[in-house]
Amino acid sequence: MNEQNKNQILIITQHFPPENIANASRIYEMSKFLNKFGVNTTVFTPYPSFPKKTFKKRRKIRRSSEIEGVKVLNLWGWQNGSKDPGFISRVLYYLIFPLHASIWTLLYSKHYDLIITSNPPVFTAIPGLISKKLFKKRWIIDARDSWIDASISLGFLEKESTLEKIARKFEKVCYNNADLVGATTNVLAQRLSNIYDINDKKIILIPNGADTEIFHRQSVSKKNQIIFLGNIGHAQDLEKYIQAMKNVTKMHDVKFLIVGDGERKEELEKMVQKLGLEDVIEFKGSVPREKVPELLSESLIGLAPMKKLKSLEYMVPVKVYEYLACELPFIASGNGEISELAHKSKAGIITNDSSDAISDAIITLLNNPQKLEEMGKNGREYVKAHYDRADIVSELKIHLDNLN
Image (cartoon, rainbow, N blue to C red; front, side, top):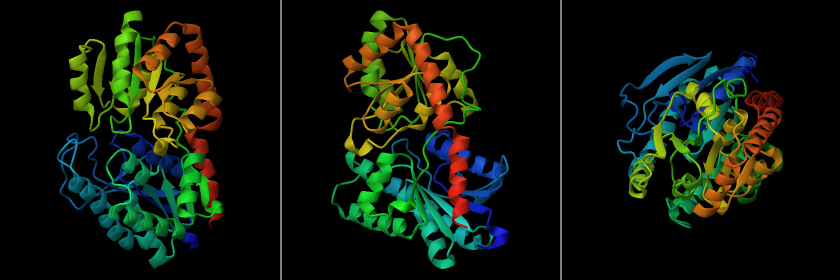
């Protein structure tokens, strides 16, 4: 590896701050800590556009900036005009940016020796594949989830369709050419290995986690509120949690804060109105990330309403680690890795995905403040020991150094 460039890394990602979603925070913290550990890091990302209609449309080809020492190059891409865009608009959004990034990756080739592409979407791998083939750059794929499987199970992609077959072949080519493949969980690592026949030695764990220096219990009083934090999307089963509040409010005077934005927000707001729960459930919208630890610290329980689908068994959302880091116990539906985290941390409860089971779990915890406190402390200790973001990136840097 070129001595001059051996500590120069380029990261390609579809999401980055000021977008206030899990994928953006994951890559931001990865790049921030890599930079702190002596790795000069540059990020290529589109202009911010999520949640839809939150940011102005940008027409400039590119914009350079710097965040905590990390160089950021925003590149023009397709910006959806609708909160729930159609198929063609989604494809343009996911495809135009990586094609544009590929051009700048070629122009920038002398300034990096290792490239990390973060997916989903699968198309972000295009500049990585080009860099590997043309310039023999070291390449790591940061695989955050099984996007194709999730798209099929959620009804966005037809199983055995031509589009699925093309996407699978493209991913297989990418995984075969990458030097390392980072997976967020063991279940995801095994699934990728089985589907794409990846050599197990190439797969490493780059789990989600929390920056425990930022996410910790604040000196604020608890309020009678429970909270959901994150993307209001199709993988979340928020309907049943909303319905559960009809039973919860019969026993406890408690509010449910839904903090975040997404494609299904307006639909769920209408549902709340129909159920007559406007005084109980508040859609707070997106909030500045620096305000999140305070909101979590004020709350009694964090909710992680994932749909119980086989294709989502690998998922542990970033929000859950941030709940635990702020000493906030969680209740989740879903199965697989999140169930294991609840068990090992002694800080979570997994319920059946019915509104009655969810309300029973919430009421049980609200009835036992001492248990809530104990679970909160367990969660903080567990995340600090196993999922501190600085430690995760430190481990990643060891893998990067071993590629030199």
